[in-house]
Image (cartoon, rainbow, N blue to C red; front, top):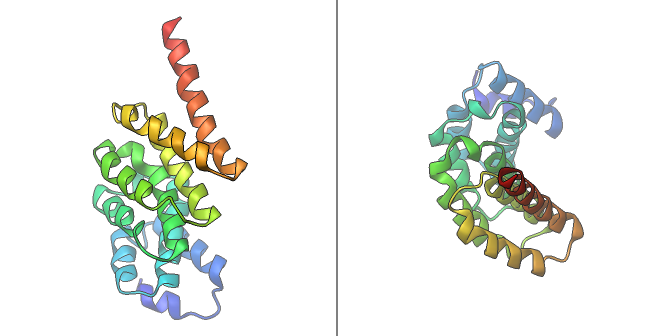
Length: 179
């Protein structure tokens, strides 16, 4: 299936296009690597739509994303367009548990882009960082104090709540291990 032809189909509006791509990823008519290759030379809107379709699929099937594709998506988090950033962060949150070797680079990209971002980017970043925290790796020793500072500076309670929920989960699991 030629991806460029799909995007040329004007009868598919934004949400329908994302769902169509996601469905074709799920049934393996479109390979994620093909979609990412197409997105590399696409405008921001098309690139974000590609990543959103991947995010949609990885919510329920994270294993569909391989290491190479996640690496590309982590790098997309450095793009300028907010929609690319927030969709990339959600993919990272959905899949990082499968590739713990990418935690350091993913966290670095997420933290480097958290300041001066819009609410949706900060929310998605909070989701991804919280998923990393919940993995309880040795990396948490460095990450927890940084995230605590982010929580102190965050103005939106909805975003603070994401981090605080992750902290509660980590603490409750620690208590359970001590019993």
